[in-house]
Image (cartoon, rainbow, N blue to C red):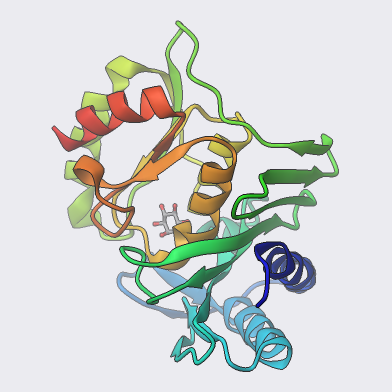
Length: 268
Ligand code: LIP
């Protein structure tokens, strides 16, 4: 039986190698290979190359595990463990050279469905600034940062000044009016908002106390799988509308008390 700490160790090792490849390709110049759900929803050659590397390393290390990746689809698990992978989360930032993108790798147990799985381990690595966030179920969440050093992560309730809230807007312009309307209902709770452009870095930002909360509609499982566990192991809560699990409909994350207030407003 593999422990969550052993799965975390593998996720961290592969995330660092994959992140180094992503950063190398960024330095060499990035080519958009295709668009997906909308003109703004791009995939680069590096996205595909990095996911191929991650998939090959995982298959070599744990051949019976399943795989659910943003760019190469699903692989069935015979071990009960599935790896949920976003090779470069924050693809638009990556293409523009904005140093806020991350390799996100999670190991989950059970069905490869965020409504049903149990996340066991996760790693989120931003190679642009050498920051790695990691967690194993029941073992806490950690940051190893070239900027801050190493520290255990813990969420924080907002100060009386209001919450610093992260959010995002999907690739489909037809959804933006609804997202802006929802933002207008959240602003009375906020001191300000931040639009980082990578869900995994929004989520780990909440875990690290760099954001008080995050919410976004339209995320894919690979966007939130690792970051959600890291927040939970940092003492925070992650969910969807009205007590549901995080998913395409909505993802909400914060410290426990503010999570309730924000969920009520976002679900209203
Ligand atoms: C992105 C998310 C971001 C969201 C974007 C996109 P990608 O993931 O990290 O939070 O606002 O629409 O979903 O496409 O860069 O892997």
